[in-house]
Length: 91
Image 1 (cartoon, rainbow, N blue to C red):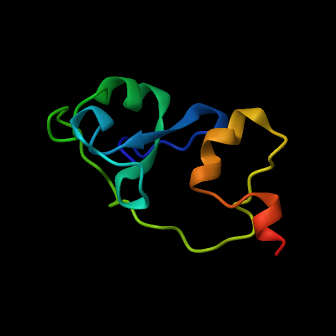
Image 2: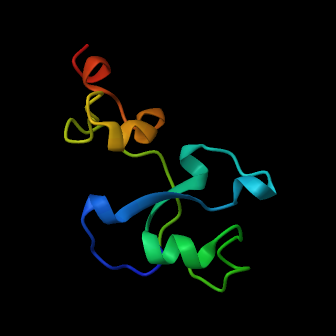
């Protein structure tokens, strides 16, 4: 959401636009995907404080069956708060 580079999911992280250290919440309106270098560069600052441009405003994604997290895959467990799990998607 900051540099526009296309990267595999393994090289992305979730970034709080308004950092938690500044009172930012973990909500769809405050979370964007970010490549690891951009997330590291931004750190605990807002995009404007870090002199970085947010390419797209965060929003709740449309429901998409392709966006289902497997509960068995430990590396994506942090995403479960934002993306439906297999059990939820199959109901």
